[in-house]
Length: 357
Ligand SMILES: Cc1ncc(COP(=O)(O)O)c(C=O)c1O
Image 1 (cartoon, protein in one colour):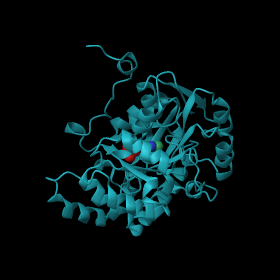
Image 2 (cartoon, rainbow, N blue to C red):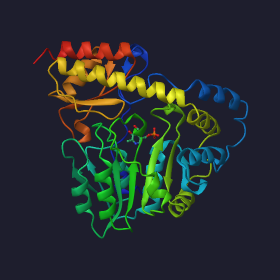
Image 3 (cartoon, rainbow, N blue to C red):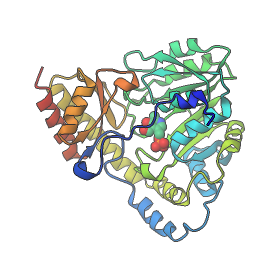
Image 4 (cartoon, helix red, strand yellow):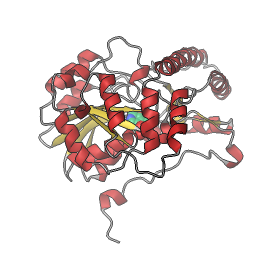
């Protein structure tokens, strides 16, 4: 076989540790899912849609895109849907990158940006975080004539930090109009800081080089259905649409997505649960002598010494969390918020592993 070296050299996906068999009781706090599950309206919509699964889905996701457009005060032409926002990251890289192009991103951010860049034979330029936050000044300076894309994760997975509206606005002003800025807002619904940027007005005003990535996997609790979307200029959206596999969004995801989007109560409940969990983790982690990074998301990153040792010790006690050494942040672990009981239990386990320092 004549494999492409830049794909052959990618790391193989390693599934998280056993979720079946002897560890079926494992408490999974490693994927930033919603412990409250999906909206009851989304579940009802799924039931209603089940009988139609013998048919192909609407290839253009028309009803869902209309709902998403109305949700954001944008037009249908500003919206595209995908099989999870992970697929959108792939689509963007596929559509914009040639071998040798450069992509600016942070070092210590969502790993897909780097993997999909490498997959195209392009070069990631990774800019270190500053105080666990995207250093947008340094990222703007890292752009060269070969840069096609910039990925910004705001709030950032895995550190949970967010950039302010002023920082993002200064960054957008500094970026050449030929470089596409991909702002991944997977966790936007969890943000509490008041100066978090609302970039929809930029799109309404016609900014051509900005794409906002969103997902139904986090606050909407539909991770298993695989549903993501993006808002962008009609020109960029139409371009991405050409690169999209025809039936990339299945019919169940389309039906559930519309119902989930309309369930403000479930979103508010999920946000309130994340707020309470965050307070619980901040207090609990500090009580055992740790210094958690302030979080704008549904997870918390915390320096623990040896991230592998501590993650393995938690695993032995029945909890799966994410060691961040492989994300470029050695010494930190990321813990997703679980139910009230799970939060208390993982804190108690950490307290046993790391007695008060
Ligand atoms: C920042 C960020 N972007 C994108 C994704 C992918 O989301 P999806 O499940 O919609 O593919 C994740 C998932 O963890 C994420 O954390």
